[in-house]
Length: 159
Image (tube, rainbow, N blue to C red):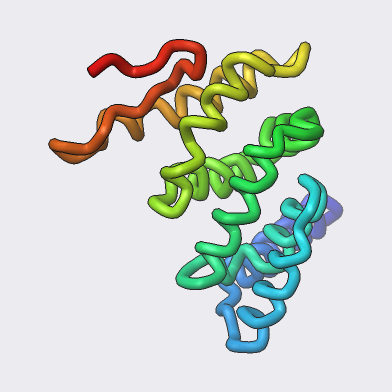
């Protein structure tokens, strides 16, 4: 009988979780998401906005999330916070990688790659390597005629 209660409880939690995961983004949610994202100045702020408004991650909200992520990455402060959060939560890591590879992030990827390569905090080698690996495929996706990406800020691209 006790096992049955545990199983039923687990099923109830799974149903509630799946319903929350499929939550729709109302116009009010989208407006609140935009306001929250505009105030992001730290990794914990970004993670909270993801938790609160990740269900709105499309269209203008998606672009705002990308801008916020890239601002934080280019600032390269407290990288331990994002490294820790992405290592503990696969969905958050997927969110970060999605926005890192967004077309709206293309102008900052090279800088982020250089920062990860040259200024990786001690104990974050795995995160920095994963970050660089996530960015590197974008160079291969360039269209003919595009300028090549310079992944080494210390060596200019030859003509």
